[in-house]
Length: 172
Image 1 (cartoon, rainbow, N blue to C red):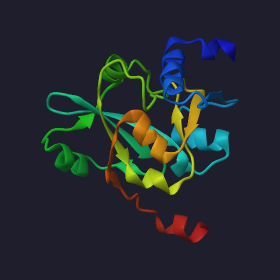
Image 2 (cartoon, helix red, strand yellow):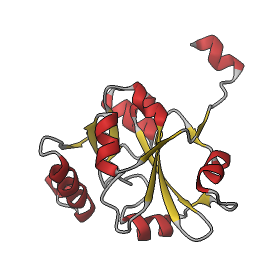
Image 3 (tube, rainbow, N blue to C red):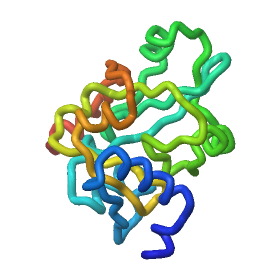
């Protein structure tokens, strides 16, 4: 466990969040948080309370979108908000080069390069939300309003509603 907390990306996140609020702490989970589903299962929280940090490539730049775990980022909405015609998911190398994190542990903060940050306004449904902390087994807990201040991000409607299949509706 201590080895994970000593990893450079985790240390970078820890220093960043502690500078903002010394009470914020990185948690090392017993099970992986590589995906939003894994993280919600490990934490015993709703899928939507997990912050997915998604990196997108535009014509000439990169942007990070912080999206609720139960939602999908809308490329059409991103194109309109950013006034860009060409937006796609960044590949693993581009993510690492711009954020300093590997996919599965991309934190909402402490990126190597300054990135425009858009925050899914639907994350505010939860009292607390959880963001990756530089490693697939590490997260930190924060309120929505604190996340906006911490990231200096812009609150936007950037998600598309996932359509449930008929059998999923019956089961719920």
